[in-house]
Image (cartoon, rainbow, N blue to C red; front, side, top):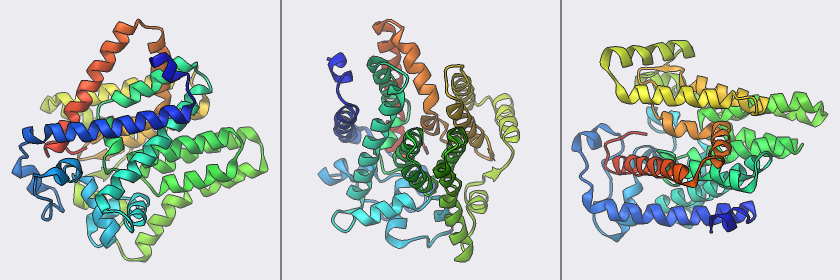
Length: 371
């Protein structure tokens, strides 16, 4: 059955998987509802919780249960704009998409719909990228690893991650095909979706230099997406993104070696096991991305993403597992390697990762984990 699915066109696989996951996570959230006992301390410590829906009924089980953490901010920005200091750390593209869809739909449905559409394009683009080097079975293994990766459920929650991932992979696809106009547009939009989105300009510069095509000069415009948002914040009198992280989140921008040093210090002095696991996984992804078979532009992109993750003190490697979804070269290496393993061994790995993903989801819905 999996073999037949893997041989279908990439867009069909992406559509089927996205629809199946949307139904699965909706059902899982509804099933978990009776077992959720939110901790009032976490609810009170998270902003924008004063108007949460009452936790019972069909509407809450299907939709309201997803109104958590960053989702609350995106919904608030879509309706009220950047009227609170902390709001500026949430880039405008996803709230704008929610607002655009909200003319016909309730905001939470609009948010989940935008995420689902973006997830479809991310899966489709990931299969396209993997298919340029891997066989059908191997690229399908790449997708399976992404599906079960701990915290990958957030792709279909009210977060901007799936939108950023979709824009990044299609930016690279268009550039490799020499379609510099669409590549530049996607790159500009990626810089408006999340801070890491602008990093896709780095592999595009590499591809542009390699192509020696005049049209590739358009890639120099890609950082303007993020810079235009920063410029608007300054022009409108808002706090800068970096300053808001420092004041509102207690996170200071530092060189990556300083961030790595703080992480090591906390691991040694506080015995922070979870942070140690995160650091080991980040190092593993860096090593996988630097393998010889990985393209040069993919190597520099993966390295840029990982270094950016290390550039904050105060809450080192916060959200590391979901940010690593952007390091697609590592997943491609793992997919190629997994194809050579027995199905039992690979199936066991998928089961372990999938279980961790559901545990992460339960903690997220139970207000005991900030992603």
